[in-house]
Image 1 (spheres, rainbow, N blue to C red):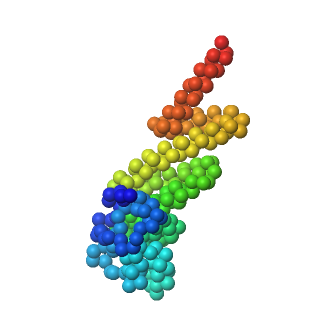
Image 2: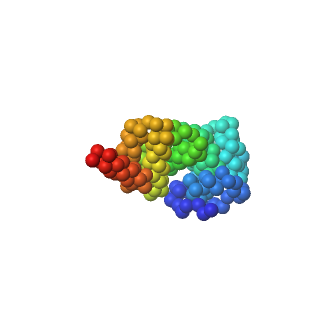
Length: 231
């Protein structure tokens, strides 16, 4: 599996080859986060225990080292840990790090990268929860969609915007499909009016998606049946 090309890391970060073997979760993370990075050129190097954990791609060890350090690590070091945690599928740790960075260092030059990693962590959490009931998936998915859209609104000139945009498009397709699944379940349960309202919602609020086209075709077919029955 080939990780998507940069821009996934700040321009100030130089590329490095991960030293640890990639697990399945790491490969999934790479689909989200792209290539591995090291701290920015010219920045203060991380403490040895954190550096060693980063070289091994060990999110939990690096995160624990941050938490037990006598003094707060630099933003660059914490971003490096957040990136590794995202790659390893440790989405809660990624969000904790990026949320703190954004609250405490809103003027940092890579604040958009912190927001980007945080948004991908939310997306990763949602993508992982495929076994949740469709209505729950839909509600949670809409919140994640708004978070991704907020990134584009807050950082329209960010180099990461071009990575967020296609994810929004794919997520919109997924949400439309989930709404159509909810409609099918309502119909199967005998709730015809609810099913129809949901199908109309897909057609009207997700135009351009495959599910919206399917919804429109179903509504046209149903209308034709009703017209024939009335003749």
